[in-house]
Length: 173
Image (cartoon, helix red, strand yellow):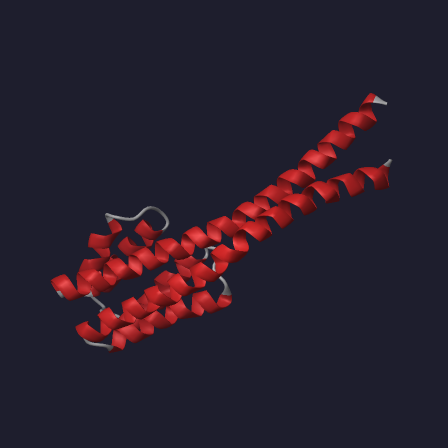
């Protein structure tokens, strides 16, 4: 009898915890978009103000952001400053793919980040600033849409986790 009760509580707790963790992933996704938007705006501002190359801007901006973005920007700067001088778009793609392994971006958001590197690799400083601002505005728009959905999805995941746990307990007893 006590084992059934203890097992039931553990099953419900595990399913509820899974539901809560899934709900938290939605919030994490919104925060990642916000941080990328912030980085894009810093690139745009620094580009127009200092007119430094992307490698130098990456180091400057890396001091103002947290991980995993900090290490991404440092690696980007280091790769751009190497002697073999690969084009920016190739370096950006390679380093962005390393960053994307740590983030939970959608396929479309991933492509936009990679395409940003292709664009800025072919543009002059004014066009780079415009590209960064455009990317930041796209992220802001997507973030706004997600914010409307996040609270609903979090509640849904939480509720489904608890209900799935109760269903499993009923099924197993």
